[in-house]
Length: 152
Length: 229
Image (tube, rainbow over all chains, first blue to last red; front, top):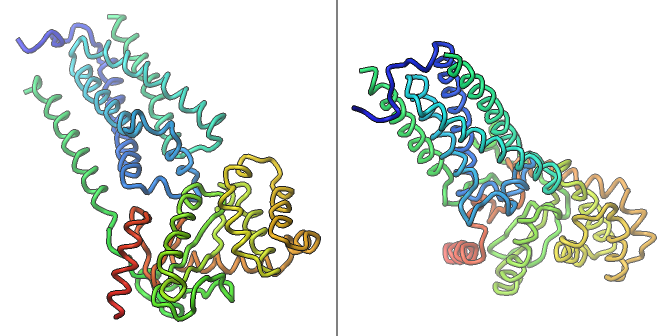
């Protein structure tokens, strides 16, 4: 008796498991990116103006949530995605549903952040764009995996 | 074994993530980074010789003051605008006999669309002997012009305020000498490894960005003054 998440893999087809595995690996890219941005933010380096334009984005009021760096929230989210996607890849039933809900929320947040960069801050940060790419990829992977799993 | 494998993987990633964050966090040094004197070729800048920058440099304070703060600044950069009053306070506190301030142009183009125009305006004012007056006005009103579509009339207004010959100021804005000074300061910045603004050197040693606060800078200046006594 491990948990209600566990199953003997009747749900996940091999293809769904593979897609969750790929999603777990992709989430590591997002995790590394978000950790880097969090450390940049906390060390104050992101506040300095540089040629990349990241400083404008990371020193804007939208880069923090109640004083906590948004990148830190992102790092936490990517870690949870990695954990859930890994569990889903190993056939833990509820994990697939949870990761889809989380990734869906992250995708909506990404759309909002892209809007802020384009129309409010008027600067793009390449690390934030990488994160947007990772989240979009995760969304596609997880939704396809869910479809594959539900076919079973 | 298969049951615990995902949990092992999660634990490994968590550990690796925390370790990476800790490693990245400890990288920035709090001590002053040695930077080379003009003409020297230290390991930090490898084969790049240190450029002298535009001469004469824009400086306030005695040439033989024991402490020199050399700032590489971009007029449109918000943190540069924030450090401006701090430097003014320190200048008043230590006086020209003890503290010399040098300003170097380092407009971050194309990130800041008006940075070059602002640098040109300050250099054009310098040709009429009013660099620091223009420098102060541009920084103090950074929020007023930063969002403007065309900043030239705004800077011409500042030129009028500080009593410049505006027609001459307009001509100087696009002059060769103004372009050259900005280019030479930028070249010096690059040769010293400047990557962003504000970057400040205290007697030739780079002050780490987290130390660019009034109290920390005061401490560093006092330490330098004590070391020279």
